[in-house]
Length: 541
Image (cartoon, rainbow, N blue to C red; front, side):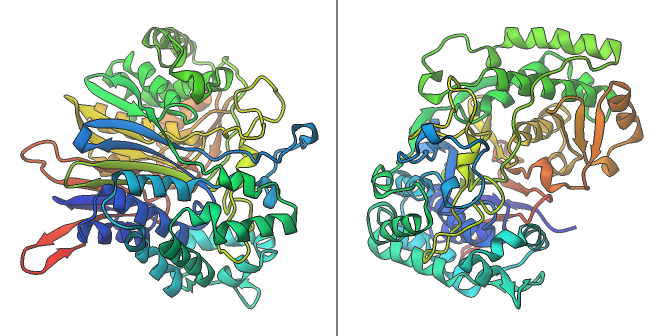
């Protein structure tokens, strides 16, 4: 089993790609802070994990800025193009090609992050990603599997075909894929600055590509530089711990509600080694995801409203009674309309020795985004046009020009006595909050180590009576209680790609625990990279 655990007294990176974690550790070793390192990790992920995120997507973060002792959300949402015409609403969500693309916001997100909170120039933090793109990243078993799955569409894109295929076949596992065009685009930004992506030569190439292929993104869209918005974190409490997570348009409300409901049960009842504990969690997931579907919330009005039901602890007690009733009758009768589940994102967590924390969930939406790259630029376009509501004109996320897409991100910080104790997040659309909840209850309620909590078996349920689980890792007694309660079990592989990929860091908090502990989830290609300082030799990873 691959090593996904690391310790350090000087800083930590946990991401879904070893080259990306190493890029962040290199920046920390050179004297950068967590914001510098996060920028390096993000761009490196766009090279080594291009199916999940990149310059053509969007990024969202929960941040602890030590100097101001402030935890806040940094909302880097993308926007639907202004040239889109609602009168020509497609019958089905747009998932492929240039018409599926919203205004990319990741470049503006990190431009703002670096200029506002970083200490290094963009040219320095981009060097690890540029070198990685030039010299090649390894074709992992996961990327190979995804390339084969989407082979037909990827071959239709000139850049993707050159990068991922040889003699009409996907590169073999272990071979490296080089991205010279992407390296040139990033090098251009080191020379001209990140704003060139929106107002300069890079922008001109993007607009020309859109015009040639019939896309909606225009120069007017790019001039609306999507600088991220600092929003208050969504605050809650779980037993004796503080909880800060991502507000709308993210899905921190879902995680908060799940934990509120779990808090109404004694710890011993939600032990995930027992059938009862798993059943309570399964029912909690169903009810909570139903509520998110029924009670969507737009970020521009969320903090102006009082008594938001989903995160209200009195409402959690009502859900407790519903769950108790189902448990006592041992039959699932509660039905709901499930939320849409799509999107294969990536998450990484960064912490530095100064106390700064950055937890980023970023994406190009579905695997390989729109399945096409920006010609002459080398990055995949996102397909966030698929993440809007296409039916209900009163829905906060109805597809309108300039509107933000729906999101399920929930980067989270756990505090104890007002000090950060744990930072974590996950990709996986609707599975994000359910994956995080399982890790948190194991870590906080069952006192499992962080590594064991992340590696433990997982399940997810949001659809009516359907439960997806790592069936070979779950005991027959637990499966029996699921089935006897009316769930229909769908098998997922051990350490399933589908069930999230938690990247977590435990922060120094005790004299006998004065080090960072990083854990990268086995479910994808991740690694945790700690920083080791030697006085004679300088800084090393």
